[in-house]
Length: 533
Ligand SMILES: Cc1ncc(COP(=O)(O)OP(=O)(O)O)c(N)n1
Ligand SMILES: Cc1nc(C(=O)O)sc1CCOP(=O)(O)O
Image (cartoon, rainbow, N blue to C red; front, side):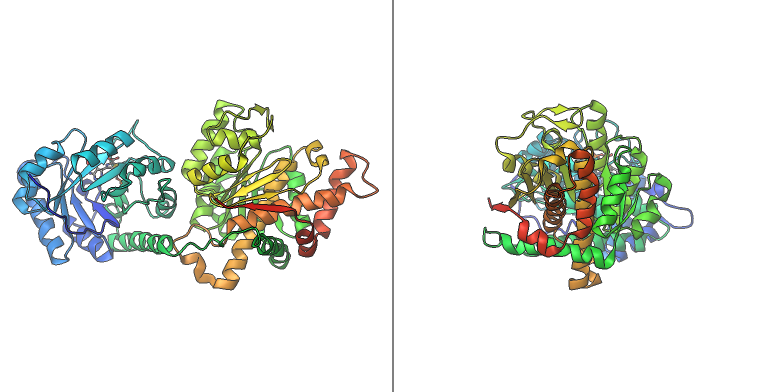
């Protein structure tokens, strides 16, 4: 049967029902009504335990309510029920009726959605003529057994790529809730820039005692994200000439640090905790080196930025909680995956952390960046790096696009990218390589400047900037450039001092010079190149 042109459905907030999750004291229909009033844009009736008569009854009542509010209703699995109630569509799982057979039985304008777990299943759903795909499970969930089928938010983009060049829509499903929806949308992007059309949610709405408010919060977050991502790119139009203004803006953040003295929360390794705290103080910010998971919720409300450096990797639960609450409070998160290529445990921990929260900036040496980018070009020597890339710009651009954040590659030349433009900074002194923890201090400086860039943006654009559908306010490329320049320029000044005789005298001199830095000195000494794609 030929397929008619489908009416447009707004997939923004897709409610999948779940009567068994209803809290005491609220009926199914009351919960559904409130959810629709809160902003649900499409409803799927999913009844896994009801017999046919009961399913039909629930579907009829749901259809009547949805019709009153002009909301499309989709039926899960059952073509017969969809036909009986004249549903807008059906949702089919991988082991349900094939799309072609369903299409032949249903009226021509019926919407057909297909659950897809793998990229191959997405490809097949497109070939079969699905109207939309449900991509999941993104996270673990209590609502359904998804063991062995958790994709993780960072892999949704690989599935979205299979929709390129098609008009097939997509929603993500599985563990989506208020606390992770913005981050999930931010990272669910294909390399071509395709985002998902909506989020499908069961428990965060159905199990809520206040489904109207739960739906309202989710709907407003999805709407804000869509608005922010459809706005013209805010990135500065890059060119070599413009690198001057970039450097000026980056250096000027030092004044913001000194004016506000933001709290920089650092979960860092035991080797460098003290010197990183001193570097933070010298820059004019305020360090807090807390690690307990139990205080992360409170701490992230107060911090300016969070640095997670897993050099000694003993505080994983604290790192997971800290990043999650930093995202919720829209604070920049700088991730320093020290030695990530060195052990399987570090690799799996990095993956778990990055699946739990969104990094604003990832900073690493060549071996660390290579490990995250799945490149074997540069190998690790313990936590140190054993070389450099032939084409560093290409490697970090690819990683920045994959992780949807700014990437800093430290080395003799430091490279920084937002996935498009690449800034190469040629500052720094070889003595940096002869003290332990210089890379960790670089992370500290970048986190400090990230806090300043967010504060600068809130000052210039108003507090409302933090309410938008973005995870963090401000240009994290500028922040990363500022942080790298601060440490590398200070290292040059320290190394040039007469009282510096070697690495032992260099470290205290470096802390002194960080304290004496000015934006003018940073900008005048910066040696930068900019590469645009
Ligand atoms: C939007 C959406 N996506 C995925 C599913 C899961 O459907 P299915 O694979 O058929 O599994 P069950 O829902 O039948 O357990 C869905 N229902 N909706
Ligand atoms: C119905 C369903 N399908 C999934 C899939 O992965 O295909 S996950 C899921 C349950 C989603 O429930 P919640 O929003 O409560 O996590």
